[in-house]
Image 1 (cartoon, helix red, strand yellow):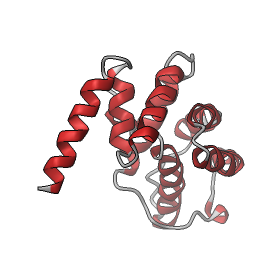
Image 2 (cartoon, helix red, strand yellow; image 1 turned 90 degrees about the vertical axis):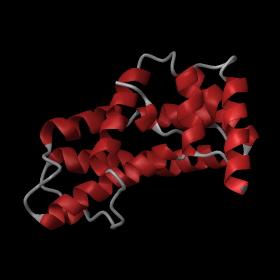
Image 3 (cartoon, helix red, strand yellow; image 1 turned 30 degrees about the horizontal axis):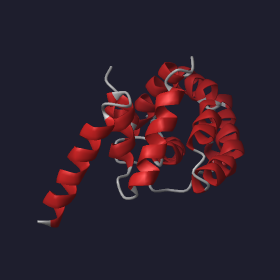
Image 4 (spheres, helix red, strand yellow; image 1 turned 90 degrees about the horizontal axis):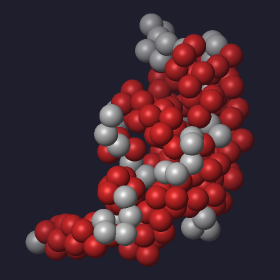
Length: 167
Protein backbone atom coordinates (compact mmCIF):
# COMPACT_ATOMS: atom_id res chain seq x y z
CA UNK A 1 0.00 0.00 0.00
CA UNK A 2 2.71 2.51 0.97
CA UNK A 3 4.68 1.56 -2.15
CA UNK A 4 1.59 2.23 -4.27
CA UNK A 5 1.13 5.68 -2.73
CA UNK A 6 4.80 6.52 -3.26
CA UNK A 7 4.59 5.33 -6.87
CA UNK A 8 1.51 7.52 -7.38
CA UNK A 9 3.38 10.59 -6.09
CA UNK A 10 6.41 9.68 -8.16
CA UNK A 11 4.32 9.42 -11.33
CA UNK A 12 2.57 12.73 -10.60
CA UNK A 13 5.91 14.42 -9.88
CA UNK A 14 7.37 13.14 -13.16
CA UNK A 15 4.29 14.27 -15.05
CA UNK A 16 4.36 17.75 -13.54
CA UNK A 17 8.07 18.34 -14.10
CA UNK A 18 7.97 16.83 -17.56
CA UNK A 19 6.34 20.04 -18.75
CA UNK A 20 9.25 22.19 -17.55
CA UNK A 21 12.29 19.96 -18.03
CA UNK A 22 13.50 17.42 -20.61
CA UNK A 23 11.95 14.02 -19.95
CA UNK A 24 15.32 12.26 -19.85
CA UNK A 25 16.62 14.64 -17.16
CA UNK A 26 13.52 13.97 -15.09
CA UNK A 27 13.73 10.22 -15.58
CA UNK A 28 17.43 9.80 -14.75
CA UNK A 29 17.21 12.02 -11.66
CA UNK A 30 14.05 10.42 -10.27
CA UNK A 31 15.45 6.95 -10.96
CA UNK A 32 18.57 7.72 -8.90
CA UNK A 33 16.74 8.91 -5.80
CA UNK A 34 13.22 10.02 -4.96
CA UNK A 35 13.30 10.83 -1.26
CA UNK A 36 13.57 14.62 -1.05
CA UNK A 37 11.42 16.29 -3.73
CA UNK A 38 13.20 19.64 -3.47
CA UNK A 39 16.51 17.86 -3.92
CA UNK A 40 15.20 15.83 -6.86
CA UNK A 41 13.96 18.98 -8.58
CA UNK A 42 17.35 20.65 -8.07
CA UNK A 43 19.10 17.63 -9.61
CA UNK A 44 16.67 17.71 -12.54
CA UNK A 45 17.37 21.39 -13.13
CA UNK A 46 21.14 20.78 -13.00
CA UNK A 47 20.87 17.83 -15.38
CA UNK A 48 18.72 19.84 -17.78
CA UNK A 49 21.32 22.60 -17.81
CA UNK A 50 24.20 20.13 -18.08
CA UNK A 51 22.54 18.53 -21.12
CA UNK A 52 23.39 21.70 -23.05
CA UNK A 53 27.14 21.20 -22.43
CA UNK A 54 29.09 19.60 -25.29
CA UNK A 55 30.45 16.91 -22.95
CA UNK A 56 27.02 15.72 -21.87
CA UNK A 57 26.30 13.09 -24.52
CA UNK A 58 29.77 11.50 -24.55
CA UNK A 59 29.79 11.54 -20.74
CA UNK A 60 26.34 9.92 -20.58
CA UNK A 61 27.47 7.25 -23.03
CA UNK A 62 30.66 6.59 -21.04
CA UNK A 63 28.80 6.24 -17.74
CA UNK A 64 26.09 4.12 -19.27
CA UNK A 65 28.87 1.85 -20.51
CA UNK A 66 30.30 1.71 -16.98
CA UNK A 67 26.88 0.74 -15.65
CA UNK A 68 26.39 -1.94 -18.29
CA UNK A 69 29.69 -3.59 -17.40
CA UNK A 70 29.36 -3.55 -13.63
CA UNK A 71 25.69 -4.62 -13.52
CA UNK A 72 24.97 -4.73 -9.77
CA UNK A 73 28.47 -3.66 -8.87
CA UNK A 74 31.38 -5.17 -7.03
CA UNK A 75 31.70 -4.53 -3.31
CA UNK A 76 35.44 -4.82 -2.93
CA UNK A 77 38.16 -2.31 -2.13
CA UNK A 78 40.23 -1.05 -5.06
CA UNK A 79 43.84 -2.19 -4.82
CA UNK A 80 46.17 -0.01 -6.94
CA UNK A 81 48.87 -2.71 -6.62
CA UNK A 82 46.77 -4.88 -8.97
CA UNK A 83 46.73 -2.35 -11.80
CA UNK A 84 48.41 -3.68 -14.92
CA UNK A 85 47.85 -0.79 -17.32
CA UNK A 86 48.68 2.88 -17.15
CA UNK A 87 45.04 3.66 -18.05
CA UNK A 88 43.89 1.92 -14.85
CA UNK A 89 46.22 4.02 -12.73
CA UNK A 90 45.24 7.18 -14.58
CA UNK A 91 41.52 6.52 -14.05
CA UNK A 92 42.06 5.72 -10.38
CA UNK A 93 44.11 8.89 -9.87
CA UNK A 94 41.54 11.02 -11.67
CA UNK A 95 38.71 9.46 -9.67
CA UNK A 96 40.60 9.93 -6.40
CA UNK A 97 41.20 13.58 -7.28
CA UNK A 98 37.55 14.42 -8.00
CA UNK A 99 35.85 12.16 -5.44
CA UNK A 100 36.17 14.45 -2.40
CA UNK A 101 35.21 17.49 -4.42
CA UNK A 102 32.14 15.77 -5.88
CA UNK A 103 31.08 14.49 -2.45
CA UNK A 104 31.34 18.01 -1.01
CA UNK A 105 29.34 19.47 -3.89
CA UNK A 106 26.69 16.75 -3.58
CA UNK A 107 26.44 17.36 0.18
CA UNK A 108 25.98 21.07 -0.52
CA UNK A 109 23.38 20.41 -3.22
CA UNK A 110 25.61 21.98 -5.87
CA UNK A 111 24.50 19.51 -8.49
CA UNK A 112 25.70 21.36 -11.60
CA UNK A 113 29.14 21.82 -10.03
CA UNK A 114 29.22 18.12 -9.14
CA UNK A 115 28.29 17.16 -12.72
CA UNK A 116 30.94 19.49 -14.11
CA UNK A 117 33.52 17.92 -11.82
CA UNK A 118 32.45 14.40 -12.80
CA UNK A 119 32.75 15.38 -16.47
CA UNK A 120 36.50 15.63 -15.98
CA UNK A 121 36.52 11.82 -15.72
CA UNK A 122 35.34 11.40 -19.30
CA UNK A 123 38.83 11.25 -20.81
CA UNK A 124 40.23 8.78 -18.27
CA UNK A 125 37.08 6.60 -18.56
CA UNK A 126 37.30 6.57 -22.35
CA UNK A 127 41.02 5.76 -22.20
CA UNK A 128 40.36 2.98 -19.70
CA UNK A 129 37.82 1.34 -22.00
CA UNK A 130 40.09 1.77 -25.03
CA UNK A 131 43.16 0.28 -23.38
CA UNK A 132 41.98 -2.12 -20.67
CA UNK A 133 40.18 -5.45 -20.95
CA UNK A 134 37.91 -5.24 -17.92
CA UNK A 135 37.15 -8.94 -17.84
CA UNK A 136 40.74 -10.07 -17.33
CA UNK A 137 41.47 -13.76 -16.91
CA UNK A 138 42.99 -13.16 -13.48
CA UNK A 139 39.99 -13.04 -11.12
CA UNK A 140 41.71 -10.62 -8.71
CA UNK A 141 42.53 -8.17 -11.53
CA UNK A 142 38.98 -8.45 -12.94
CA UNK A 143 37.40 -7.87 -9.53
CA UNK A 144 39.69 -4.90 -8.94
CA UNK A 145 38.74 -3.33 -12.28
CA UNK A 146 35.06 -3.89 -11.59
CA UNK A 147 35.48 -2.39 -8.11
CA UNK A 148 37.06 0.74 -9.61
CA UNK A 149 34.22 1.12 -12.10
CA UNK A 150 31.66 0.43 -9.36
CA UNK A 151 33.12 3.23 -7.22
CA UNK A 152 32.85 5.66 -10.11
CA UNK A 153 29.32 4.56 -11.01
CA UNK A 154 28.12 4.90 -7.42
CA UNK A 155 29.51 8.42 -7.18
CA UNK A 156 27.70 9.37 -10.38
CA UNK A 157 24.62 7.42 -9.36
CA UNK A 158 23.98 9.75 -6.45
CA UNK A 159 22.96 12.33 -9.04
CA UNK A 160 21.42 10.36 -11.88
CA UNK A 161 20.82 6.85 -13.21
CA UNK A 162 22.31 7.05 -16.67
CA UNK A 163 21.31 3.49 -17.48
CA UNK A 164 17.95 5.12 -18.24
CA UNK A 165 19.41 7.12 -21.14
CA UNK A 166 18.35 5.62 -24.45
CA UNK A 167 20.95 4.62 -26.99
